[in-house]
Amino acid sequence: MKLYITPGSAYARMARIVLIEKGLDGRVDVVAAQTRLSDSPYYAVCASGRVPYLVRDDGFGMEESAVICSFLDRFDGVPSLTIPAETDRWEWLRLEASARSMLDGLSVWLRETSRPTAEQSPTVVRHEVARSERMLDVWEHQCSHPLMRAPLNLPQITLACALGLEARMPGFRWRTGRPRLVHWYDVVASRPSFTSTAPPSGR
Image 1 (cartoon, rainbow, N blue to C red):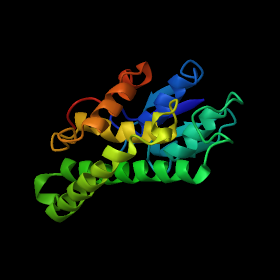
Image 2 (image 1 turned 180 degrees about the horizontal axis):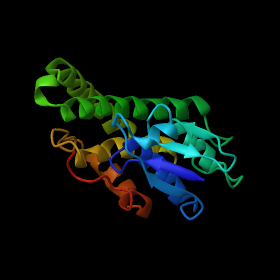
Image 3 (image 1 turned 45 degrees about the vertical axis):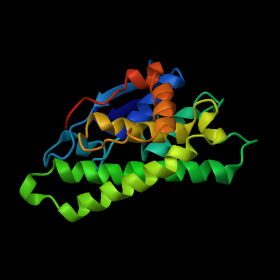
């Protein structure tokens, strides 16, 4: 199988973390894709041009990080990162959706500020900055939820990858005044699967 990624993508990082946690990093080739180029050869592989993108052994491709993570988690027949049968499904999905919502907003902020200054929308940036502040205040409390303290799972991976965008976003200063979230993140981010997939600093 082949997993197409870009080094700075938080969504691709989620899939890379699952590969390592499941011991599949030697089973799947990780390929750096060229995206946002009009003539990128990657578009012949993935029509949407998005990452991550997993090409399975049967030749079919899969996109959307949560779908890929779920597929990889179940590849060995022993899922450990997605919803266990004994877990409150709706609480799990609620936390995962909240973490994904923050990641999506941060990604919009990052993309907007990566554009040439004259093409940026200050309104969009202000909206996403405000959204992130509200959600970070929520997560300062939600990080104590039992599912966020349980063995590593997809809601935790999603939230940690969102917070890890601080390496690429100088304006994303989320640590001040949120000691519980800082402690939670530092514990999760110390895992080898996180340290080895850390995004490059800057854009």
